[in-house]
Amino acid sequence: MAFFSIIISVYNKEKCIRNTIESVLNQTYNDFEIIIINDGSTDRSEEIISTIEDKRIRLITTKNQGASTARNTGIKEATSKYIALLDGDDSWQVEYLQHMYDAICKFPNFKIFTTGVSQNYRTKAVPVPYSFKQQELYGIHNYFKASQKNTVITSSSVVFKASIIEKTGLFDPSIITGEDTDLWIRFGIYYEVLFINKQLVYYNFNESSLSNTTYELSKKPKFDKYLTEEKENNDLKTFLDRNRYSLALLSKLQGDQKHFSYYTSHLDSKNLSFRKNFLLNSPKWLLQLFVKIKSLKGEKIYYPKTKKVSK
Image 1 (cartoon, helix red, strand yellow):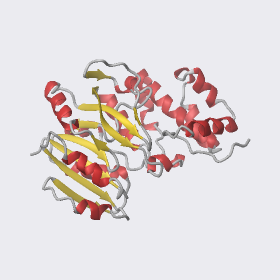
Image 2 (cartoon, rainbow, N blue to C red; image 1 turned 30 degrees about the horizontal axis):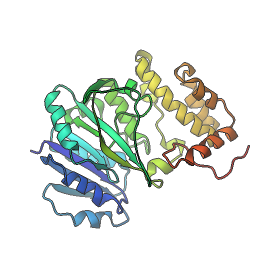
Image 3 (tube, helix red, strand yellow; image 1 turned 135 degrees about the vertical axis):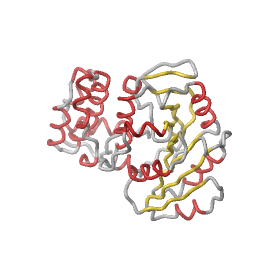
Image 4 (tube, one colour; image 1 turned 135 degrees about the horizontal axis):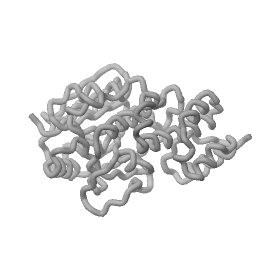
């Protein structure tokens, strides 16, 4: 049995899937299996994957059902005690698995391990900033406190013990985008996170990816399954309110009063900064201007860009 089961979900990633797989095969630590779920790709992804010969690779092709179902399929097929997730357009530094293995050996009682991420844009790589300061190599964190600025767990930077799924459950297939955040919330409710203070993962920004093009609020998380837990967990409540804030802004930009009312009705403004409260109460045209200015930087934004600003 391999030490790690690496789950790679793929949908139309012909331009980058080879680089993703090679970043795994080039790891300095090599006791792993690779389970690739081709989620009904209509491009050359499957053909490219099939040309890579390595006995550790297992390719499973399914009809297109979305990232949640694809990842769940891979997790169910895994034979190892530790699961490593990797998206089909991201990549790892060659020492990634070695650092994960070392951390697991040093902290055997921990269940969730993660590491620093750099966002790769066309002309630059930007380390993701977090809401905590850590000088040491290893740090133990409450997920919700550590993810106030950016999530400390991502779908390409997490390794977790497979047995925790019995308690947390799998990805929720009913959520089309934001399904990863939903699972990380359940991880955070039950477990602390061991963070490795090194930039070992590259998130390759793609403007056409699902997470960057899907703005339909019906496909976003509702966070209603945590209404009971957040009453007893202030850190969870603060985390959820910041996510509700983002979705409330998206609702306002889309002129969707129903969803705006839903998210704001569950949101405590005391958990937001003055700036966020200001934006939440700003007119639509000002939000559009804000998004347009931010998009000029060429970095990831979480709202649709607008071609012109109008009232």
